[in-house]
Length: 264
Image (cartoon, rainbow, N blue to C red; front, side):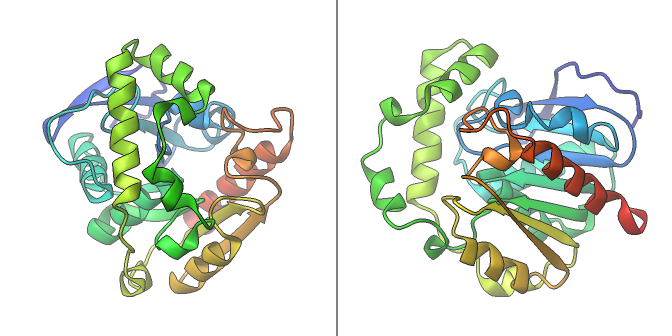
């Protein structure tokens, strides 16, 4: 595909979806996968320009999120991973680096498991593979969550991308159900991931530091970075409690160094 940076939103017909994506920068492809309830801008707006200095960034909005409308099919991490693979095939990209945050990190793991030939390196930011890897009470809380509990900045970001209250509610229901129904990814599958991985987490994350450490030991060629702050602070995500922190710039530098060293 062309290495030209556009930044202009585009749609690809994959697996019944009109999948929205944007391309920035030039170099080796880096796919960005957002977290639950997020858009490209709300999740990666702070660090995307830094990542695009060293990579050709391909940022997606997955099923029911942002510009990508929901369709009548199940929404799973496995299906999201297959959608990512289908887009890369459509763009004639044979190999890419994959970065995912939160739910996007779980999707990135599924890409590595289901489509290993497409993955050169992984960046797994606050990724979950086991139900015991998240703070106590999370899943119980999801059982009673309503859209009123959704942070307003995420609502506003969705409505900016897609001004539809029905679409926003559909996204909330999809994300809630997926987390309520979340099943562990077997450790044996994580151990089979061959791509080098950078595993990142906040020291006050909803993903337990112990879980990130365990994941870094399961994946054979993994590094671990624990950074100050909560679930989204180290990436400068829209809900960060420290919007003026320099930590996201440092995190982007770490990511770029990991992706570009040793030839890739």
